[in-house]
Image (cartoon, rainbow, N blue to C red; front, side, top):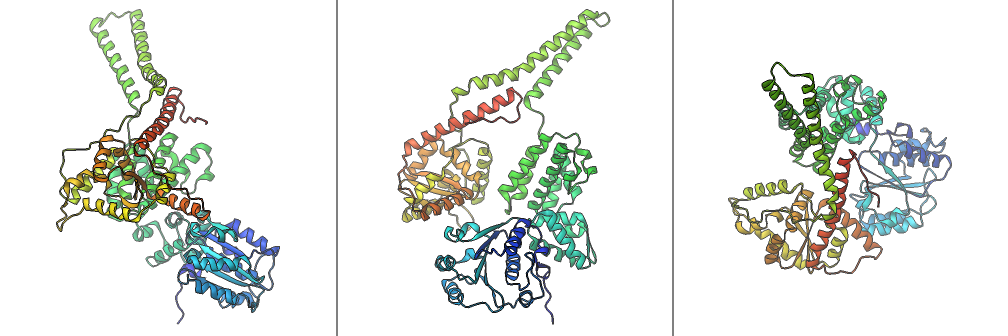
Length: 631
């Protein structure tokens, strides 16, 4: 009985002509084959499902083809047939995820000197090479340094940053980016046609977004849709399996955003969330639609439209491009901060509602002031001279209205001028934070609610930054025992009983802002804290700016300097630390002076605030949307 193959396996490309996307990679490899200038080692790096292993197999087959022509395998020789049937003894594939030890690499090293059986080369394809152990990498390195003339290595990885620099320097590197949407849609259409299905273009567009440039993921989506339909795949079929919004729904949401209709937006989001919508996909789709609207407004060229038709743009004809940019910014921020999390629904909704706003305060005040003046003058006209107003008196009143209008309009401009002249006198004051609010924390639930309130209150407040070099300095002087002591102490603040009641409510209240942090390291005088997101980091930094709060910290931890960072900065630190260690350039540990640290941070905030304030005021004064200051 023949085994039923998944679509991504059934339609795996077997020659360079079948490859979806990656035309630059294909052309380079074909030219190398054509000119017989093959490197002894390749590294294919990129996200999952983009064709790394498939192209590695095609390259291996082409290299050993007995009748290769113009860089393309003949498909009929003994070597090609054996390769297509996956029984070519000269092509050895190894999955480093399950064979990651030094013994497996040594086995390759022992067998590599034997000559190939059919073709000219023995090709070793090592998938997920980043999973190799350090010892295995060292063993592989010796082989890559002096390989036999008949050996070629093709390494594939989804984690480029984990590959040692010594390996990278000995490989020809190809970066496999996401497969472009057009190539992906064409390939999916080809698969559907061969399977006897028709598919709507709108479905292909949505799948291209869902799969995020991965043809394997896209093929799996198509395969699932084929199980719920007979011969024609529609958007409704897609919604029944993967709850996604249709193009019309997304267009209506965008229209509601631009028309300031919060009730409709909230209602739609609540229903969509209850039905299990993937809001990551929804966000990307909205951004794509906004991009096409903006491109068309700038170029008036229908060729830029892929998801939309020209008729779709009629209701956006009078929309300001600046408003579209603002919506796109909020969507991008929400996507970046919440991708793959379970809070993306809430954050995305709040980000969109943040876009809904009335005209600026100055404009409202001017219009209200002028309106009031005009009403007062008109009333006076009616009362004083109901039937005998002369033309000259009317003219005087009109001139008076215009004069007052100018005075009112000048007020904001004068305010901006004052802001610019006062920039040199900027002084950053300590952020106003509530250290001893009159509230009680009895349960863990109360604590989380209060902490979320703190996060919201401090979200927009300016604060200083923790630098990478400060964190690296701490790591150099790290003490494991001290870290464990600090971690145990912080954890003790938030212990609960079986009913979820806090055992130390006073301490939990006092140090509530440490709740979402993990102690990463501790040195003689510094403590490194890491949170999953920047909101918690910013909140703690705001509190640390306050001298009273720092004094409360000292009572429990002494003069310990807290360095809070988020996951993103922590990943950057790890990469920098690893590189410095590899080249033996790690700095010596220097204890940070607690008293001067916050003074220096305050000065850096003054300079930063100076630039921001100057640019903002000058931009408003001269009506410039974007102003840059050159160093």
